Amino acid sequence: MTDLYEITGIYKPFKFGLTGIDAIKQRVRIITSTVLGTCVMDRELGVDDVSQDLTTLGARQLMIAMVITAINEQEPAVEIQEVDIVEDADFEKTGRLVPIIRFTINEGGEGTGV
Image (cartoon, rainbow, N blue to C red; front, side, top):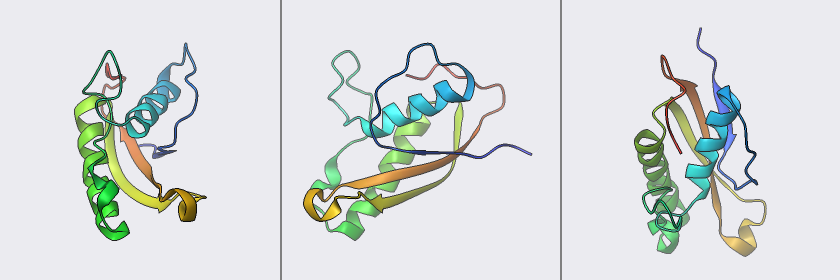
């Protein structure tokens, strides 16, 4: 049986020297908490933020697709099982939606990733 892992796509400070599943979780978190085009040395890193002018329902659906695409392209060690989008704790003030990603590790895979 393959282990199922879960991360919340909210920025957390980087930890250097991580290995194994901790490194993979951090790479997925970095991808999902970075807006595409904002990383100076890697403009292709992150998730496109085109959903900001949509209704909440439309933004949720688009974010799911964007998160899946970004992770599939940028983290080969991960096989996504499910993506949920939830409202941030301060949603009434910020309007921020947060992805929750459930994934397994691909065969052979630490991947190269971020």
